[in-house]
Length: 185
Ligand code: MYR
Image (tube, rainbow, N blue to C red; front, side, top):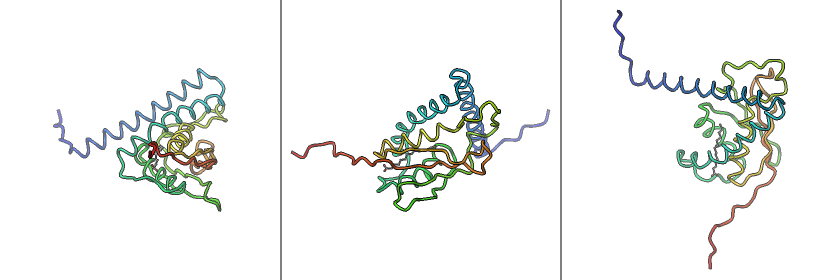
């Protein structure tokens, strides 16, 4: 029997990370598949994924602030930048870019070139209307809601629909001023 060469700690961690990433991707795929079976209508699956993402997003902010050294953002522009560069890296392992700002700074696009959610994924013809990664739009909407920014998040480009990248348009609808929780008197 050939001797087994010892692997360095780095190699083992890289392998564990890869396996975790694959497990995550496959688990997400299994969730989408189950929703398609249960809900039958692709539109309903889109809504459900968005809602699941929203519920995750409102919880992720606390974890994000605890783990990152990011301090409070001053405006929508800075917040979207932090989500794309730091948030995506922390929770999805990839970074995104923020582009296509409108003149008044209330609408932009988050562009994702790599997206581990779609590794191994090919959509059958029966799923044409599916926004497979709709959980992400919900996560972003939920996270922004938690920092008092009501937004609408819409898919503009989707690699699974033949586009070159994933692009999410994020439109700021309303910024609710945060209330100081204690009375001064
Ligand atoms: C602030 O308190 O002003 C900073 C708020 C930053 C919110 C960042 C939330 C991270 C959400 C990550 C989304 C990841 C998508 C995969």
